[in-house]
Image (cartoon, rainbow, N blue to C red):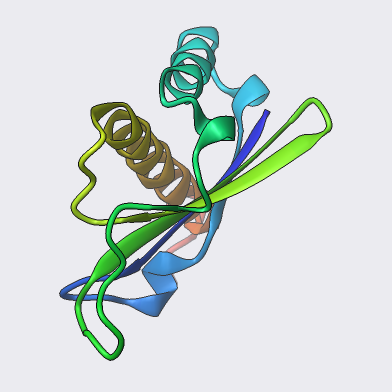
Length: 122
C-alpha cells in the first residue's frame, strides 16, 4: 500500500511544507503499517467521495485541506478532505498521516545533514 498525503492552505501556509509526501506502508515497522491499514479500513477510504467536508467558498483564504491518495492492489483513490474534519474515522486517518509526514520530513532532514565530526579544524 502506498499513501500520498498533501496538506494545503491554512494560516501560516508554507508551500515548501505542503510538498506531497509518499509513504510506502509496507516499508514501515509492522505495528505502524498495521495501524495505517486499519485506519484506512475504518474510514472506508475507497468508498469515500472525492471531496469530504464542506469546501470553502470561492475566494476564501486560510482554509486548510488535505489530499490523500491511496494505491493498493491495483486500485487507486484520491480524497480531498476539508478542515474541520467532522468524520472521526477520517480525522484519525489524517492524524496518523500527519504523524508519518512529520517523521518522513525529519528523516529527510537528518539524511541531508552533513556529519561535522569528520571535519578537521584548520
